[in-house]
Image 1: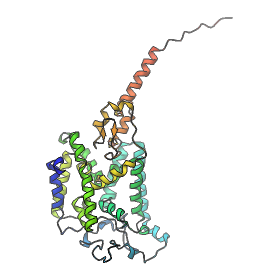
Image 2 (image 1 turned 180 degrees about the horizontal axis):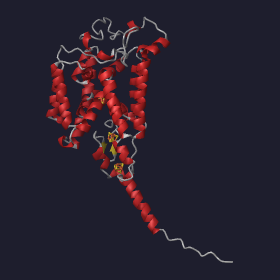
Image 3 (image 1 turned 90 degrees about the vertical axis):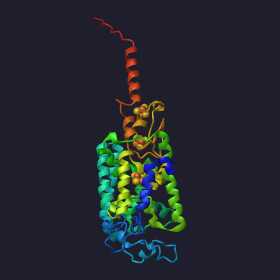
Length: 366
Ligand code: SF4
Ligand code: SF4
Ligand code: SF4
């Protein structure tokens, strides 16, 4: 598979591997806050160490859990009972901030506003990325499969975030990838400042094949987790630790190689390597509200060329790859660019020209 993507991706995957020495200590922020903790992350983690970087290799107490059926020790948290009022008060700021962010995502999406999309992307990087280190990780997918989820009452904002991701994916597709994920937002913003002449366009045949790599990585990672419970291995396939700003030199070198490759191949990690993108892609097969197409799309290639995610193949939108970036939807509605409207306009003009002139009758005088 890696051979299909070519040398740059092989280098990157190797870089991820190298970038994860045994000494690296970081875990995704899915664990809940405990009552009375100083947690402030929307996942209930302290904002500056949402992935428990300093906790050591076993930040989620996998090894302490002799029974193995409560690997994240969520059960222990349930002993301290707080009222819902107190719990809501403690988590109100995170709930409010994420609600505001979600509103920005949805308003920008429904208005198909370009500037709102970029404000959203910047907010995703600044707020969900560098402030909260809150991203959906392949570890969360594993947690969902095995029922190891954060305790609801202590992780309300995390559930709001995860619920928003799942619900929007089922309703519209990978909106999470298009606007919410901090890493995807970062690479999309990069894409806007990188000179176009540096860009290497991936040939469609290669794009199609390389897109399968992320599904392979998703399957391999989940099987590995199921077989070994070696959760920290997630860092071999995800660069999301970067938002904690804590990594070994090798990890930073690996990340730099990935971002440098992204300069030449846009959205490289998202399109070809991300297991979470693969999972959301599978989920988006259920999409209720799909992108509309005209019959002219059967032959027109304008949207296909405009799609930066390789998600349009002829008349078909490939929902698993589409991140609802709006680019093709804006073209769909553009009366000056979309052939559908131009043909309609031409037909109307022809009709008007062909219509017989209505004779004007003189008004009879009395
Ligand atoms: S594909 Fe992965 S990294 Fe890219 S936006 Fe989606 S979840 Fe984030
Ligand atoms: S420009 Fe219009 S006709 Fe062409 S592919 Fe896009 S929506 Fe279809
Ligand atoms: S251009 Fe259209 S098909 Fe391509 S990712 Fe954006 S919304 Fe999806």
